Length: 256
Image (tube, rainbow, N blue to C red; front, side, top):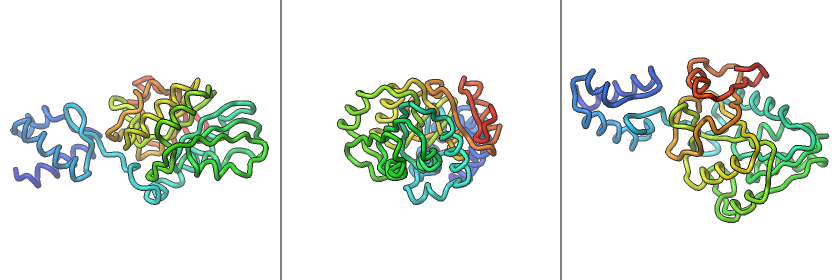
């Protein structure tokens, strides 16, 4: 089998099964495991998949730039944002992550809501500028332009001084084994700190993030209390997450 054919077969298996395990694949093809691992390395370098121990997972498409992410599943993100906004109760202190789905959450918060929102996203803060009854705290730091959020030591210090009721977390990948992942190491540290400073974390994830993975692990999926998905999120992608102990809520309010 030619290299090109092997790689296409690997991508076909990945699309069909949602993962590639090097050892059984090498046995099925009658090839050495080293050959398959080399193909996986090359495909990862081409941006076609995410290597993990023993094989590979789909690469999270949510690692695209902000303009690119705005074009991915816009309807799902509206549904998830609307449902997330309904979870916020008067008087709560809430962390809101950066990202396109978090912006939708901010857009759907009631104008008369009396609560405190803490965010390291200037885009989320701008969405909430007209909510006169909302206490809005903007965490500062070095601006990570890819996600338009503050990162670094100053942001970490500010987060450590808050105890929140809820944290609405955005990630690029949600996988039962690979965990909650994102595409930048500093951003992963900030998300981890926000989870630690909140009593409960709700993960916001449109369908393209389910079963996908990025290089930097925020936490295992069981570290979150709930996963909020859209009504059309595929059951096949949700089943392993449920088995891993993650409670799932669909954007229409139905339990998954």
